[in-house]
Image (cartoon, rainbow, N blue to C red; front, top):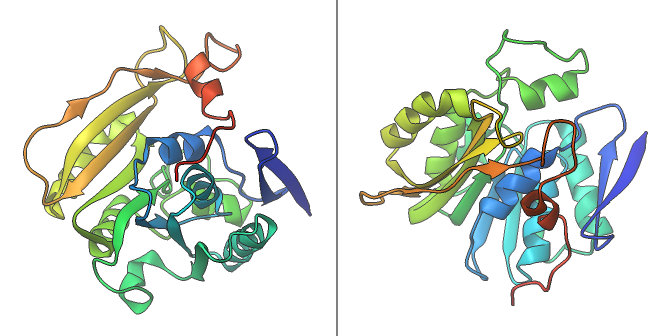
Amino acid sequence: MYTDDTLFEGRLVCRQHRMGYRFSVDAVLVARFCRPRPTDRVLDLGCGCGVIGLILCYLYEQLQVSGLELQPALAELASANVQLNGLQQRFQVLQGDLRRIRDFLEPESFDRVVVNPPYQKAGSGRVNPEDERAVARHEICADMESVIAASAFAVKNRGSVVLIYPAQRTGALVSFLEKYRLICKRMQPVYSYPGDDPARLILVEAVKNGGEGVCLLPPFYVYRYPDGPYSPEMAAMYQPETPNP
């Protein structure tokens, strides 16, 4: 069973499993945080239903996107979404394990890598009984280091990797990034609403073999207040706009 959901007032269609993994605001946040050049090659690592690649293709009309997804049903769904949106010439989906990325992709073959990875450590928190959602949200098949190692393998020298993780894991994230020569250049904490403390998520852009100097961006708020509507900044991320040529 599927639902056909839309983004940008119907300009994009994203088909999702009704009872399986479904994307959330995290995917929109990380897609918007990515700043590719118009003609870059971008890899969406662990692409799920393909929503991040769809958003990037909508925002940048010359961009070339590849998605790598472990779960066959989600890879098939991502391919269907490529077809639904007529993006066959710009978006390809590969089914495979990022821990064996060398079997699927050439080293340093992408200008940008974007990742909305499994957040929770295996065995921690509530594991969803639906396997598709469990694998997408918990580090059952890919932990933080394997995600970063795969990103470092795929991205070109001086290319960038954009990730989103729980803010409480920032220390480990920075440590693993540096281990694989990915140097943080932009960081932005994400809060549920003003006054919420601590930050829930952290958005990070790291550059392969980048120099010193990091830009610490102001807090981003998803909602105006508890149980309230989206903040103006979050709402703007869903609004249609003229694609970048």
